[in-house]
Length: 304
Image 1 (tube, one colour):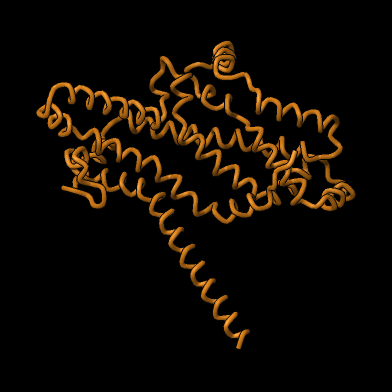
Image 2: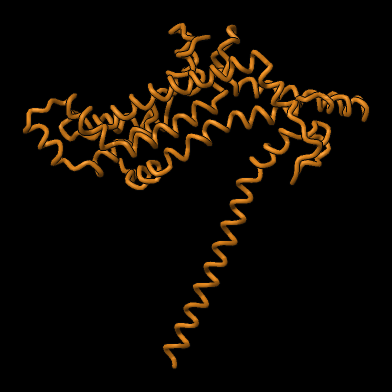
């Protein structure tokens, strides 16, 4: 009888715990998803309704004028192509450097491996900062070039540590020894054995690097001064955001009529449409990398 009562209490407490977990997950999901949902419905709503705050839950006075403006603007199309190009090039360069460096640092036969790793970690916490980096880029005559957006962030010490840990803990050393006995050189072992086994961590680095380059606008603000054709889409979105804030300030100082006139412009829906278009590629790519990301992060426990 006592055992039955204890089981019922256990089942009851488990049920309460499950209900609490589901409720908590539902709240978190709503908090995380609502901003994106709001952007989506605002991008297809009348600008005046968006300004008036009538689009919190449902779109109001549906219009696709914002998307029409996006696809008509040559600067936006060029910025979109620039963002794709910077993301692809930056991801290839960064992932190649990160994976190669992490693999080399995982080799126990590498001379001064510990000292080099400590130096990397030191630079992670005590880097040169913004002004020295800008001066180096300027001295190398990389301003107003693609490489000014790629090279300053070309490698991350944190990602090198994660990659090194993956190779140390997830790839058995016996595999390298067997390859060496079979006459495989260092390059052949790296390309034919290490890289195929490192698919999970490569996927993690690819998706994280892609998101970083795709969302970056600050580098272009620093290093693209004259050649505005090189601006990525995110920089154009930043300029548009500044224009919206300027319209709001001016309209507020000129009265209600000016507010209505400013609201008639499709700037707000254009901005929301741009955000949707910016988020869409990453959202579409993530499901293809999800299983690798989970596996890579699980296997890559960090230690220096």
